Image 1 (cartoon, helix red, strand yellow):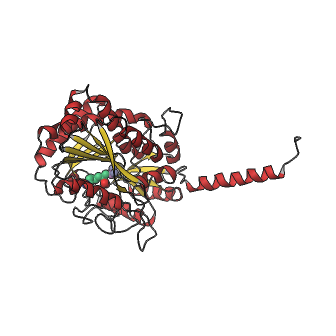
Image 2: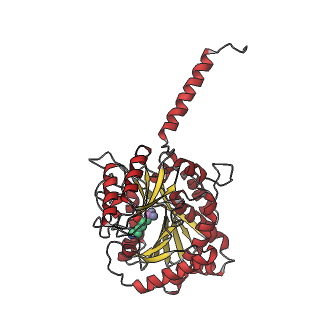
Length: 428
Ligand code: DDK
Ligand code: ZN
Ligand code: ZN
C-alpha cells in the first residue's frame, strides 16, 4: 500500500485496539501527583483537626491504619487524593502542627519501587514483588521439590475462590512434631511481608543440612508457612489499587468492599481500634471470622492446636516486634518472657544492618486494636505469639523498593530463627 493511502479496516482495528488499551488502563488507579504526608500531632486540637479532615476528605491512612486510631504524640502518615491536596495542605499549615511530605508523587514512587533488574516479569524471583499467578506457580513447584522436607495442603479457598496453601517444612516424621505457624500477607498492600514468606521457605530448604540452627529446628519441629493470606486483596493491589488493605468480600447494606482480616478474629472483637463501618480500612467484619480467609486459618490452627507452639504474623511497616495484648492494656501472663524474646530477636536483627526495632505489647507500643490474629492465637493457648512490622519507618512505607527485599529478608530471618530456637528450647 502506497504512503498516504489509508486502509479503512486497518484503521478500525487500531482504533479498537486503542479503545481496549484505554479501557484496561482506566481500571488501574493512577496516583499522579498524589502526596503522602507525615504529621506530628502534639495537642488535642491537632488530633481533632486530623479527625475533622478525615471526615470531609477520603484520606488513605498508612500509619496508623485508620483515623480512629490517631492519638496525640504519634507519627501520622496518610495519602491524600489529588483533588484535596491543596486544601489539606493549607489547613495543616494553619494549624501549626509539625508536618512534612513523605512522598511527593505517589505514582512516580510506585513505578520506582519496582526497581529489580529482573527482566522477565512472569518469572519468579526472591528479590522482586511477585504476582499471585507467579506465587501460585512457585508454591506448586517448591512444594514438590523435596518431599523429605516440604509438603503442602489447601486449607480452603478465599472469597473469590483462590486456594489457600499452607506449606509444611520439616524433616518427615511418622509422629506429630511440635510446630510453628507463620503467615504473610494478611494485609494486601504490605508486599514486603509476602516476599518474606517466600524468602523463608527458600532459606529453610537451602540451609537445612548446612546451617546447624536450621537443621536442628527442622529436625525437631515443623514450620507451617502460609505465604499469602489475603490472596484476593493482594491480586487487587497488583491489578487495580496498589493501596488496598482489606479482603474483597461484599458487605450487605453497603457498597463498600472487604473487612480488615486483622480485626476479624475472635479476640475482644470490635471493642477497640476497629470500626463497625464497612467503608473503614479497619472494618472488623460483620462477625468474628466472617471473612472466609480468617475462618480457614482459624480452623487450621484449632485443628492443630496441640502441636502449634508459636504463631508469627508478618506485616509492614514501622519496624516493630509486637506481642499480646492489643485488645487490652492488661499485660499477658507471659509478658516478661515474651518481652525478653522480642528484645533478643530485635537485637540479633539489628546486628546485620543496624535496623532498629521497637518491641512491646501491641496496645501500648502501636495502638489498641481488637480482633487481631496474635491475640486470638495467644488466648487459644499458643504462648509464643508475635506480630512483625517490617521495614521501613515511612520513607517509602508500603512502597519499599525491591532493592530492599534482600536485606530486609536477611535481617528478618535472624529474628525469626532466634524466636524459633527459643521456642525449641522451651517446648511446652
Ligand atoms: O493490624 C494492624 O493494624 C497492625 C499491622 Se498493619 C498490627 C497491630 C498490632 C497487632 C494487632 N493484634
Ligand atoms: Zn498489616
Ligand atoms: Zn502495618
